[in-house]
Amino acid sequence: MSSPAAVPTTPSLHTGESYQEKAWRKFKEQPLVPIGTLLTCGALIMATVKMKRGDSQSLNNWLRVRVIAQGATIAAVCAGTYAMGSTAGDETKQTRQLDEIQAHREARAGRDRKEFEDRLKAAE
Image (tube, rainbow, N blue to C red; front, top):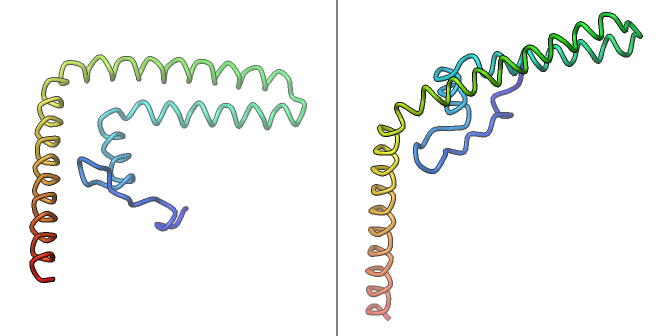
């Protein structure tokens, strides 16, 4: 598998979670989307292998599997979006609260910076 250093660990702006934690959270929210994506990629890889071997019948079957998996993934995305739309009000409230916290932190940092500069001028 990949080493832990290969996964970026920069926290996102609002939540403070790493990319890996965010991916895991998103996987728990909509598990069918990444599974469908992996199935689509797997079918495409198998189709490529069959094309290199010249097995046209099996190639066509794998391409059909890819189309079905891709369609199921798109359906999962749409269903997840619809389901998440009913909880959008809660997320909007959380986002607003996080934005307020961030604005408060930035204002406080600005005041601290101004106070520091004033003390620095007074010390000169």
